[in-house]
Length: 401
Image (cartoon, rainbow, N blue to C red; front, side, top):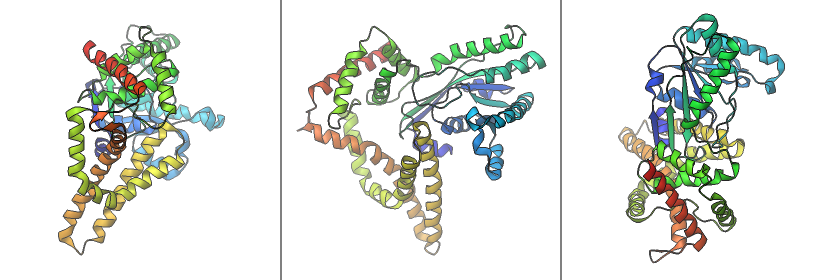
């Protein structure tokens, strides 16, 4: 699965993860953006086994129940699952307490719900009651680690993702009263999580967040989390008149399809074109030989998954599973032609990578070809102004860092 993430994302940046890897009883308090992809990312990029709570309704099947518990998942039931099921949460909390007493780590998505919106949602009290009860009643030393999970674009491949762990929250001086301790822990977590996650409270500004963050990679080779936060600080600032930019965005979006993100330019654009030209032969074979499982994964995810936070993790999981089955089928089908196996396998793996390159850059090149004439940009004036103001803001974020 870790290899799948490396292929799916452009870059995965982990910061402060040693706070979690140090050992001892640990509760990881994370935001929740992309459904079960969040938990899989943490499980893959933390160097210790992590148990985590997940939706209880998927534990109904006995085989699924056994598999999920083997993977470290604990069921948590909600009101929508029925009042009778809520009583099982006590058993899950007891299991989590036993794991913590044994020096283990438990991941809790303290917002309670998964949502791709770039905003920190109100935290639920459940995780903090669990921590407070173990600290106050059993005098346990538990490290509460805030963790921000941030995607440039959680719904599309080949974008950056940032895992940002903060310092452990110290509750040793917060008093011994259970309600007081739980409340203080939740308030501390809200304060400590805020700088670790994308947080733009005004919903009207969310389109600018997505376009701006995706445009960063056209300006710098390596996008840094701190620079993204600098840009979001400008979006939140009243000093930057985003209303005019949003009006331009809405008018441009309603016109024919154009590149809202800042397009690649100069040498970087030429490098992208060179890569495509060199990769076209193997890319063509890749589409022919590896396109079927990837196409099926995308089609199933698009048609069967309506929630944006579930679509990308479902597509990724299906792509890995179907590609593995497809590769094995092709390889075993060629067992009688052993000399060709290495060649076919290389083409399959190379084609998988080439498919992503073509999928990512081909739409952009088509739009560039449409809006460029004799090497000179022929974009609509309003779109050029939109790009110019957006780029100025991104460059300002780089200067402030």
